[in-house]
Figure 1 (cartoon, rainbow over the protein chains, first blue to last red):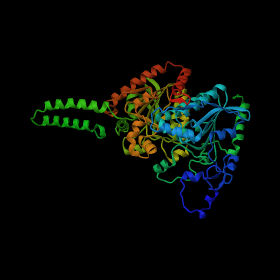
Figure 2 (cartoon, chains in turn green, blue; figure 1 turned 90 degrees about the horizontal axis):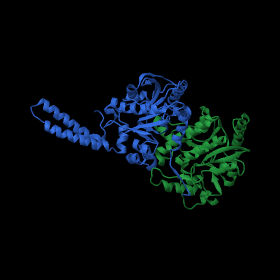
Figure 3 (cartoon, chains in turn cyan, green; figure 1 turned 60 degrees about the vertical axis):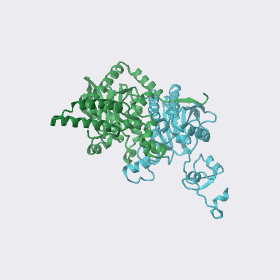
Length: 286
Length: 320
């Protein structure tokens, strides 16, 4: 496999797809899409999926995140078996979900449950962009709503890690209405004095950006994450000008006053722990 | 009739023919009254056939009709003492949203709605009814005011979507919409939302969380435009017509999906045919809803609003 890197010795030229270029070679090695350097996957995982060379934050699966953030074995999953019923009878939708289930090992684009962070309990929702690009359909909306409600009832904070391309097209307006549904639940949590922390990871766009992701009591984001309402291409077509490279990045949002802080993955646990402990002292929570 | 939609061409042509014959009868000695009666009967039947069986795509066209009544048209008929109020107190005044205080049947209300233009000049001023963050924040300011002074909020939804622009992103389009969703969910006064034209995605929803959601018969409400859906799902925006059917975006579809409370019947041929009568249809529905909602105390109102949204969606379990 390593031989493939020495192009001179190659007898046949092949053009790998964009996707193949990103994760060649399978398993053992990984290429950073940002600095193009190749390194051992193990090295990347040890570094919390952050590129050891350029600090690029690679995508992370929901369970990788849970493992790295929360106290060992503290995670209890909720609504694990909930799946979409294809409400619009949309052609090919069920097969697409089945494929994503097999590929990602997840039943939907969000994993929710209860976990502890340095001994402090929280209701958590971790989105995973490998399942239908993290898009929000009925299941994502229902699971997040349940998690918010559980947080309110148990008087514990609610923490979400968002990663989503936006609405789930195949569920049409029901997908749009999940923005409303989660917001109504967050309003209830808010009224009861509950704490809500939103951490936006790459990518957080469209309907997810325009609902729960943006209304945390604290809004954090990982470095370099793409965060925005409308897609870059649509905006460029609308205003007929080229947008700067850093447009809609976490840093861009910070500069425009939309975030409390951009938090490096290595400092995420400590940051969340600080917020949780300050709220615990305040006596509002737990 | 300046704007004729494709599907209604036969009706318009026949109607013009009748007008022509009537003119001839008046001007010449010929007596065409028999023909006219026959043609009028045929027109009646044709109108029923065409307008009572509109396809989703026909309704999309109707919702976008250049003469379709806008928020301000309905405000004229539905309210008295309307006083428009401007600005978000943070950045500017977005004319893609109109808002103000008024009286409905003599009682104070706050009215907010997307506002399209009817010609190019007005559309430029109104940004084609596509708001920037300051529009949503103006709306929120007035909703908070309504909450403080205990008057119901009535919103009219009519937008292709929130504006996808650079400045909109810089000023936090996402946050502006998201904030409205959460805050509308917490208003302690009745909130009634009426979709009068296009209900385009998050930009529509930003004025759309309420206790009662109504849609005019020929309005649409969708997560993405049919053109957008076709481009995204099938890489071909020419399939918009098919997308309009698949995506379930008509008032009737949304009623079946239990997303809205009621479909408000439209004048045959579209709301623009008789704005006054259309306004009466809307008035009836708002009156009934307000009568009901005004009876409820704050806690019940909020609890029922939560329950209303909690049931939206459809899912199952792997183990079934």
